[in-house]
Length: 300
Image (cartoon, rainbow, N blue to C red; front, side, top):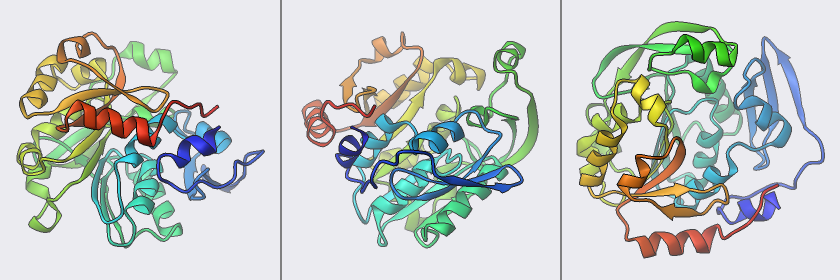
């Protein structure tokens, strides 16, 4: 069951509700409660995350469990691509009062929703949320916002056939962008865990934090891997992932069971889309951790 499976992630879970609970607040804003007991604000126009959170109280439970299994109280966590703050809330609770979360979201409307959720749940003292993109340089970039599929908004180019498939329109805005090597100060450069989901711009994030990746030897990174989206942002997926391999990272696919499976760089080149765990730990350590904390379960 969902409750038992998510408990293994180390996060408290409230009793599974029998029906959706929430309230429409007007102006496309909806307030609901997650399976973890967090109150979260959503945009009712969204057809990516919002329907799942409203009806199920969950979003990407396999990533949720795997990510949270690596986070401990007092840790320093960086999240790039917060969207409405689903993971931001969970990370804030897991790091506790002595931990810190630094989060980034380029969409100003989603940033506001995430901030309101953090404020309502009492987490603003442990989370610094920035309305900006993360890239390989500091400056300004064009950000493309989908009208309904808000989770797909991107720094990359959007092809007409993609818009037709989704029944979408795109609005372009100019956003501030930062490179983490330049943006993070001496007090915030220690990173234990990182979550990245920026619709293909992940290579830009990594290129802008080369020094941080070298400084934080034990860092654990959970990321979305989409070669198609990376190419839309002007990157060669194979080349970019090889660069991370040269920095000592090993790759693990996060399965929908919540467990992880090691994957070689050559095999990764043939994958269309997946979620990855990146770590420098030895495989036996990672697999033991996954087996111990998640195990083979079902959340349905």
